[in-house]
Amino acid sequence: MKVIALLRDPVSRAYSHYWHDVSRGRCTRSFTEVIEDHASLVVQRGFYREQVQRYHDALGPDRVKVLVFEEFSRNLERVSEEVCEYLGLPPP
Image (tube, rainbow, N blue to C red; front, side):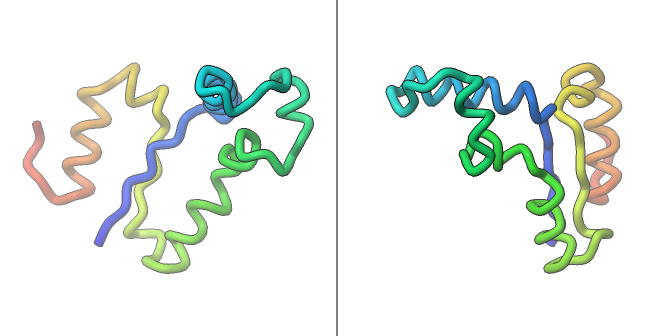
């Protein structure tokens, strides 16, 4: 098994997560209040190291590929080729 983690800029991800929660009626606090609460999921989900480390521990670092969402968005072709190579597939 191989895992690909596509990570987004933590601040952009937190802001998006916050507005998603607000739009669903799950949050009525301000963004500032939410990010000051370091136990909130909006903040905790941005601590990628711990999340990726669990996969490294379970599978080994050679079976975990970490990609950055913003790079994927900017250069879809190059990142797609990188993913195919990682998975042992022919280029797209």
